[in-house]
Length: 298
Image (cartoon, rainbow, N blue to C red):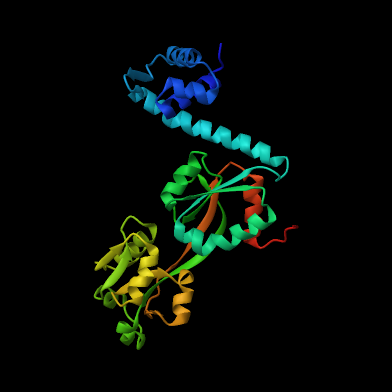
Protein backbone atom coordinates (compact mmCIF):
# COMPACT_ATOMS: atom_id res chain seq x y z
CA UNK A 1 0.00 0.00 0.00
CA UNK A 2 1.29 3.45 -0.93
CA UNK A 3 2.31 5.63 2.03
CA UNK A 4 0.12 8.62 2.85
CA UNK A 5 2.82 11.18 2.01
CA UNK A 6 3.24 9.64 -1.43
CA UNK A 7 -0.53 9.69 -1.91
CA UNK A 8 -0.55 13.42 -1.27
CA UNK A 9 2.36 13.93 -3.65
CA UNK A 10 0.49 12.07 -6.39
CA UNK A 11 -2.71 13.97 -5.62
CA UNK A 12 -0.88 17.31 -5.95
CA UNK A 13 0.55 16.36 -9.33
CA UNK A 14 -2.88 15.35 -10.66
CA UNK A 15 -4.32 18.62 -9.32
CA UNK A 16 -1.48 20.62 -10.85
CA UNK A 17 -1.92 19.19 -14.37
CA UNK A 18 -5.69 18.37 -14.18
CA UNK A 19 -4.68 15.08 -15.77
CA UNK A 20 -3.95 11.56 -14.55
CA UNK A 21 -1.86 10.78 -17.61
CA UNK A 22 0.33 13.89 -17.31
CA UNK A 23 0.81 13.29 -13.60
CA UNK A 24 1.82 9.71 -14.36
CA UNK A 25 4.46 10.90 -16.85
CA UNK A 26 5.85 13.43 -14.37
CA UNK A 27 6.01 10.86 -11.56
CA UNK A 28 7.27 8.02 -13.82
CA UNK A 29 4.30 5.89 -12.82
CA UNK A 30 1.62 4.11 -14.80
CA UNK A 31 -1.72 5.87 -15.18
CA UNK A 32 -3.59 3.03 -13.40
CA UNK A 33 -1.18 3.39 -10.45
CA UNK A 34 -1.91 7.11 -10.24
CA UNK A 35 -5.68 6.54 -10.50
CA UNK A 36 -5.53 3.86 -7.81
CA UNK A 37 -3.52 6.14 -5.49
CA UNK A 38 -6.07 8.94 -5.83
CA UNK A 39 -8.89 6.49 -5.20
CA UNK A 40 -7.07 5.21 -2.12
CA UNK A 41 -6.67 8.75 -0.77
CA UNK A 42 -10.35 9.51 -1.42
CA UNK A 43 -11.34 6.36 0.49
CA UNK A 44 -9.11 7.27 3.41
CA UNK A 45 -10.50 10.79 3.60
CA UNK A 46 -14.08 9.83 2.80
CA UNK A 47 -14.50 12.56 0.16
CA UNK A 48 -14.40 12.87 -3.62
CA UNK A 49 -11.39 14.93 -4.69
CA UNK A 50 -11.89 15.10 -8.47
CA UNK A 51 -14.68 15.13 -11.02
CA UNK A 52 -13.91 13.56 -14.35
CA UNK A 53 -14.86 15.09 -17.69
CA UNK A 54 -13.98 14.94 -21.40
CA UNK A 55 -11.19 17.49 -20.95
CA UNK A 56 -9.58 15.85 -17.96
CA UNK A 57 -10.26 16.11 -14.26
CA UNK A 58 -11.22 19.03 -12.04
CA UNK A 59 -10.93 19.50 -8.30
CA UNK A 60 -14.10 19.33 -6.23
CA UNK A 61 -14.58 21.90 -3.45
CA UNK A 62 -13.10 19.40 -1.00
CA UNK A 63 -10.26 18.78 -3.43
CA UNK A 64 -9.51 22.50 -3.74
CA UNK A 65 -9.33 22.82 0.04
CA UNK A 66 -6.97 19.85 0.33
CA UNK A 67 -4.77 21.12 -2.53
CA UNK A 68 -4.42 24.52 -0.86
CA UNK A 69 -2.81 22.90 2.18
CA UNK A 70 -1.16 19.87 0.58
CA UNK A 71 0.42 22.03 -2.14
CA UNK A 72 1.99 24.28 0.50
CA UNK A 73 3.18 21.25 2.48
CA UNK A 74 4.77 19.68 -0.61
CA UNK A 75 6.45 22.99 -1.39
CA UNK A 76 7.93 23.13 2.10
CA UNK A 77 9.11 19.51 1.86
CA UNK A 78 10.75 20.20 -1.49
CA UNK A 79 12.39 23.23 0.10
CA UNK A 80 13.72 21.05 2.93
CA UNK A 81 15.15 18.55 0.47
CA UNK A 82 16.87 21.38 -1.40
CA UNK A 83 18.37 22.66 1.84
CA UNK A 84 19.78 19.24 2.69
CA UNK A 85 21.29 18.97 -0.76
CA UNK A 86 22.94 22.37 -0.63
CA UNK A 87 24.30 21.71 2.88
CA UNK A 88 26.86 19.32 1.41
CA UNK A 89 28.71 22.35 0.10
CA UNK A 90 27.72 25.21 -2.11
CA UNK A 91 28.76 23.29 -5.18
CA UNK A 92 25.18 22.71 -6.27
CA UNK A 93 21.89 24.26 -5.39
CA UNK A 94 19.60 27.16 -5.96
CA UNK A 95 18.83 30.45 -4.24
CA UNK A 96 15.18 31.36 -4.68
CA UNK A 97 14.24 35.00 -4.16
CA UNK A 98 11.14 37.12 -4.68
CA UNK A 99 11.11 40.93 -4.74
CA UNK A 100 9.65 43.83 -6.65
CA UNK A 101 11.49 45.06 -9.71
CA UNK A 102 12.30 48.41 -8.06
CA UNK A 103 13.87 46.65 -5.06
CA UNK A 104 15.79 44.26 -7.31
CA UNK A 105 17.17 47.05 -9.49
CA UNK A 106 17.95 49.60 -6.80
CA UNK A 107 18.92 47.48 -3.78
CA UNK A 108 19.75 43.91 -4.73
CA UNK A 109 21.70 44.07 -7.99
CA UNK A 110 25.15 44.81 -6.49
CA UNK A 111 24.67 42.11 -3.84
CA UNK A 112 23.47 39.57 -6.39
CA UNK A 113 26.42 40.41 -8.63
CA UNK A 114 28.82 39.79 -5.74
CA UNK A 115 27.05 36.56 -4.78
CA UNK A 116 27.28 35.24 -8.34
CA UNK A 117 31.00 36.01 -8.53
CA UNK A 118 31.68 34.14 -5.30
CA UNK A 119 29.25 31.26 -5.91
CA UNK A 120 28.83 30.97 -9.71
CA UNK A 121 27.66 27.37 -9.38
CA UNK A 122 24.53 28.36 -7.40
CA UNK A 123 21.53 28.93 -9.64
CA UNK A 124 19.69 32.18 -8.92
CA UNK A 125 15.92 32.01 -9.30
CA UNK A 126 14.52 35.53 -8.94
CA UNK A 127 10.78 36.13 -9.15
CA UNK A 128 9.51 39.67 -9.74
CA UNK A 129 6.54 40.04 -7.38
CA UNK A 130 4.90 42.65 -5.17
CA UNK A 131 5.57 42.47 -1.42
CA UNK A 132 2.26 40.69 -0.60
CA UNK A 133 2.79 38.25 -3.48
CA UNK A 134 6.37 37.61 -2.31
CA UNK A 135 5.10 36.75 1.17
CA UNK A 136 2.59 34.29 -0.29
CA UNK A 137 5.40 32.54 -2.18
CA UNK A 138 7.50 32.43 0.99
CA UNK A 139 4.67 30.93 3.05
CA UNK A 140 4.12 28.29 0.37
CA UNK A 141 7.76 27.21 0.42
CA UNK A 142 8.29 28.24 -3.20
CA UNK A 143 11.11 30.67 -2.35
CA UNK A 144 13.82 30.85 0.32
CA UNK A 145 13.77 34.58 1.10
CA UNK A 146 11.72 37.61 0.14
CA UNK A 147 12.58 41.29 0.03
CA UNK A 148 9.50 43.24 1.05
CA UNK A 149 8.35 46.69 2.02
CA UNK A 150 7.64 47.05 5.73
CA UNK A 151 5.32 47.00 7.54
CA UNK A 152 3.83 43.66 6.53
CA UNK A 153 0.92 42.00 8.28
CA UNK A 154 1.32 38.60 9.91
CA UNK A 155 3.74 37.03 12.38
CA UNK A 156 5.21 34.29 10.19
CA UNK A 157 8.28 36.14 8.99
CA UNK A 158 11.74 36.61 10.45
CA UNK A 159 13.54 39.82 9.53
CA UNK A 160 17.24 39.34 8.74
CA UNK A 161 18.28 42.71 7.33
CA UNK A 162 16.62 46.07 6.76
CA UNK A 163 17.39 48.77 4.23
CA UNK A 164 16.14 52.19 5.42
CA UNK A 165 14.50 54.24 2.67
CA UNK A 166 12.95 57.70 2.56
CA UNK A 167 9.92 58.88 0.58
CA UNK A 168 10.23 62.39 -0.84
CA UNK A 169 8.34 64.61 -3.24
CA UNK A 170 10.24 65.67 -6.36
CA UNK A 171 9.52 68.11 -9.17
CA UNK A 172 11.04 69.52 -12.34
CA UNK A 173 11.92 73.04 -13.48
CA UNK A 174 8.29 74.13 -13.95
CA UNK A 175 7.86 73.97 -10.17
CA UNK A 176 11.20 75.55 -9.22
CA UNK A 177 9.36 78.08 -7.04
CA UNK A 178 8.73 75.26 -4.56
CA UNK A 179 12.44 75.33 -3.62
CA UNK A 180 12.10 78.79 -2.04
CA UNK A 181 10.49 77.61 1.21
CA UNK A 182 9.31 74.50 2.99
CA UNK A 183 5.83 73.35 2.01
CA UNK A 184 3.18 72.23 4.47
CA UNK A 185 1.46 68.91 3.96
CA UNK A 186 -1.78 70.78 3.28
CA UNK A 187 -0.02 72.77 0.56
CA UNK A 188 1.10 69.51 -1.02
CA UNK A 189 -2.47 68.21 -1.30
CA UNK A 190 -3.31 71.23 -3.45
CA UNK A 191 -0.55 70.57 -5.98
CA UNK A 192 -0.76 68.30 -9.06
CA UNK A 193 0.54 65.10 -7.51
CA UNK A 194 1.70 61.95 -9.26
CA UNK A 195 1.55 58.78 -7.13
CA UNK A 196 1.68 55.02 -7.46
CA UNK A 197 -1.64 53.19 -7.64
CA UNK A 198 -3.55 52.69 -4.40
CA UNK A 199 -2.81 48.98 -3.99
CA UNK A 200 0.95 49.53 -3.66
CA UNK A 201 2.53 49.51 -0.19
CA UNK A 202 4.26 52.81 -0.87
CA UNK A 203 0.99 54.51 -1.75
CA UNK A 204 -0.82 53.09 1.28
CA UNK A 205 1.90 54.43 3.58
CA UNK A 206 1.62 57.92 2.09
CA UNK A 207 -2.18 57.93 2.23
CA UNK A 208 -2.11 56.81 5.88
CA UNK A 209 0.44 59.46 6.83
CA UNK A 210 -1.72 62.23 5.39
CA UNK A 211 -4.98 60.79 6.75
CA UNK A 212 -3.53 60.73 10.27
CA UNK A 213 -3.22 64.50 9.89
CA UNK A 214 -6.73 64.94 8.57
CA UNK A 215 -5.62 65.34 4.95
CA UNK A 216 -6.69 63.44 1.85
CA UNK A 217 -4.51 63.11 -1.23
CA UNK A 218 -6.23 63.24 -4.62
CA UNK A 219 -3.47 62.74 -7.22
CA UNK A 220 -3.94 63.95 -10.75
CA UNK A 221 -2.03 60.96 -12.11
CA UNK A 222 -1.72 57.41 -10.74
CA UNK A 223 0.89 55.04 -12.16
CA UNK A 224 1.78 51.36 -11.95
CA UNK A 225 5.42 51.94 -12.92
CA UNK A 226 7.85 53.38 -10.40
CA UNK A 227 10.25 54.53 -13.10
CA UNK A 228 7.53 56.66 -14.68
CA UNK A 229 7.17 58.61 -11.44
CA UNK A 230 10.63 60.07 -11.95
CA UNK A 231 10.13 60.60 -15.67
CA UNK A 232 6.77 62.35 -15.27
CA UNK A 233 8.28 64.71 -12.69
CA UNK A 234 11.26 65.35 -14.96
CA UNK A 235 9.05 66.45 -17.86
CA UNK A 236 6.98 68.70 -15.56
CA UNK A 237 3.70 66.75 -15.53
CA UNK A 238 3.45 67.19 -11.75
CA UNK A 239 5.06 66.46 -8.39
CA UNK A 240 5.92 62.80 -7.82
CA UNK A 241 6.43 60.89 -4.60
CA UNK A 242 9.52 58.68 -4.94
CA UNK A 243 12.14 56.94 -2.80
CA UNK A 244 15.14 59.22 -2.36
CA UNK A 245 17.64 56.38 -2.44
CA UNK A 246 16.25 55.19 -5.79
CA UNK A 247 16.58 58.45 -7.72
CA UNK A 248 20.02 59.79 -6.77
CA UNK A 249 21.15 60.03 -10.41
CA UNK A 250 18.17 62.24 -11.26
CA UNK A 251 18.74 64.44 -8.21
CA UNK A 252 22.49 64.80 -8.78
CA UNK A 253 21.97 65.57 -12.44
CA UNK A 254 19.53 68.36 -11.68
CA UNK A 255 16.72 66.77 -13.70
CA UNK A 256 14.50 66.96 -10.61
CA UNK A 257 14.79 68.45 -7.12
CA UNK A 258 13.46 67.45 -3.72
CA UNK A 259 10.54 69.56 -2.56
CA UNK A 260 11.32 70.70 1.01
CA UNK A 261 8.59 69.88 3.54
CA UNK A 262 7.78 71.36 6.94
CA UNK A 263 7.15 67.79 8.14
CA UNK A 264 9.21 65.19 6.27
CA UNK A 265 7.63 61.87 5.36
CA UNK A 266 8.56 59.09 7.80
CA UNK A 267 11.43 56.72 7.19
CA UNK A 268 10.43 53.18 6.27
CA UNK A 269 12.28 49.99 5.40
CA UNK A 270 12.72 47.22 2.89
CA UNK A 271 13.56 43.95 4.63
CA UNK A 272 15.09 40.60 3.76
CA UNK A 273 12.77 38.08 5.40
CA UNK A 274 12.35 34.33 5.69
CA UNK A 275 9.79 32.10 7.37
CA UNK A 276 9.95 32.11 11.14
CA UNK A 277 11.07 28.77 12.59
CA UNK A 278 12.58 27.75 9.22
CA UNK A 279 16.35 28.11 9.04
CA UNK A 280 17.97 29.87 6.11
CA UNK A 281 19.40 27.72 3.34
CA UNK A 282 23.21 27.87 3.18
CA UNK A 283 22.93 29.90 -0.04
CA UNK A 284 20.52 32.40 1.53
CA UNK A 285 22.76 32.64 4.61
CA UNK A 286 25.74 33.52 2.40
CA UNK A 287 23.70 36.14 0.56
CA UNK A 288 22.90 37.65 3.96
CA UNK A 289 26.63 37.74 4.78
CA UNK A 290 27.28 39.61 1.56
CA UNK A 291 24.49 42.09 2.30
CA UNK A 292 25.83 42.57 5.83
CA UNK A 293 29.27 43.31 4.38
CA UNK A 294 31.08 40.39 5.99
CA UNK A 295 34.30 39.10 4.47
CA UNK A 296 33.90 36.12 2.16
CA UNK A 297 36.72 33.99 0.84
CA UNK A 298 36.62 33.58 -2.92
